[in-house]
Structures are given as structure tokens and as C-alpha cells.
Length: 334
Image (cartoon, rainbow, N blue to C red; front, side, top):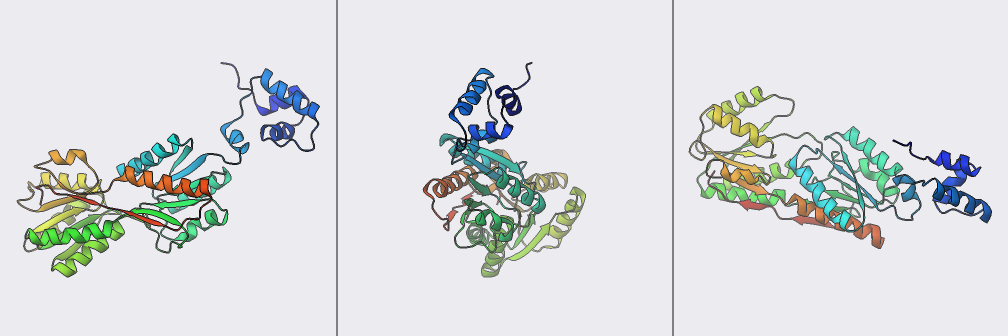
């Protein structure tokens, strides 16, 4: 395989410095003779030199590259969100620079710095940090910013956000549970990031429990293994009087709950109700179907991309909050 021609190769063949070649690539011809420019351009053509993507971006006033930070690419939420963003960007001629922050505030901080160095045209972030200070330098650098899915507690009024009506959906769920004779909510959460979509869900469930006379209980599995969850869940369930519904506040938790129910021969809705967040298409085939609170993450990604590009291309300052509905998919698990 032939070795790729570098900018140094071009400079050597043309008898100029690397800086001179870089200036020509980037369209900066001031303080340069026409003869030098023509000589370098001739060598570039003869050597079939292709600048790197970053060099090509530097040639343009707009790089047409958008940085996208997702909390955990292993979570289908993040995957669908990224797909929704990319569908819009690629159709409008933008590249997506996707970074998985793995629900880490420190990784997120480094990623933001990296995207700033790469001079992206804008950033869409599914945040790990719940504090806006993490993103303040992005705004100071006049890089358009869109916050998506997870809420930041102290978000400035001039920064865009696209999220779901998680709290409202969980509150509406409370009325349904009362009407169907439930007494207890046993929510199971797994908050890996400081910012989490589970926070408004918990707030909605607690408000519903208070207003509709339900008892609310929560198991947080962070830092604990499957055996701990199993023992804790079974113990809590045995202590509750009346009908109980178990709610997976994060899609992947549903797998653990289904495993526990199978191991202890618990059947829904006979022994307890079962509800989950996420658009699990296969969930309709488990038992007679699992009740879902469904967010359209691809649609959320579409909205976020369009909102960001509105800032990028129209030089428009952000500041709107778009709240997408959460669908309650009624199935026999409750």
C-alpha cells in the first residue's frame, strides 16, 4: 500500500514551509506571491494530496461539523437519540462527531474541550453534569449549544433544551393506578449520571402518590449487584400491603426485574403490576404485554438537530424549551 502524501511532503517538493502550504490550503494568500501559490498548488495536484478532514474544515467559514455528546451509547435511549440527530444532520450536509461520555462528568468535560479545539459549528449534549458551569465555556466561545433529554437544574434562559414531559406522564400514571386498584408504587432506578431523566420521573410519581393516596417506595441500584437487587426487591415487596406495581424508571432495569419475577415465580398482573420506560417493541410479547411510558427518542434527536442548526445557520440565539409528550402505552401488565 502506498504511503499517504502529507503536508510535509508537499512543502518539501515545492520548496516552501509547511506553514505556507497550510495557508494555501486554508485560503490565506496575503503576503504571498502569485508564483509561490501557483507552485504549491501545482505540487498539490501532482502529488494528489488530499487534506485531512480537519484541514478541509479550516478552509471554510463554517466547518459543517456538529459535536454530539451522549450519556451511554449502550443504552438504547442514547442510541436512538444519536440516530435522530444524525438523520437530520446528514440530510443537511453536516457531519456528526459522536462522543460517548459514559455517564461521567469528567469524561464530558474533556469531550467538550476536545470539540472546542476541533472548532465544531455547534454542540448537542445529553448532559451528565446537572450544573450549567460544565457548559459555560461553550457559550462564552459563541458555540451554539443544545441540551437534550436530561435537564440541567440551572439552565440559563438563553440556552435551548429539548426534553420529554417525564414528570407529567408519571403524574398521569398515578390516576390510572388508583383507578385499577393499586395501593403501592415500588420504583426501581439506576442513576449513573448527575443529570438524569429519572429525576423528573421520580418527582412525578411522588406527587401522584401524595395526591392520589398511594404509598411510594424506591430502590436505587447504583453500586449494587444483581443479588443485592433481588434480595432488596423481594424483601420490600413482601412488606407492602395491598396491590403493588413495580416501575422500571430506566429501560435496562426491566431486564433485571423480569429475571427476578421469573426466579420467584411471580406473575404480572396477578402478583404485582409491571411498568417500564422505553420503547421496547418486544415488550408486547412478554406475558400479555408490558405497560410502557414511551419517549420518542429519534423524534427528540430530530428536534434537537433542527433547533441547533437554526442557531448555527441563522445566527439565532437560543432560549426555547421544547417538551415532547410521553405516550402511555396501555397493556395488560397492570
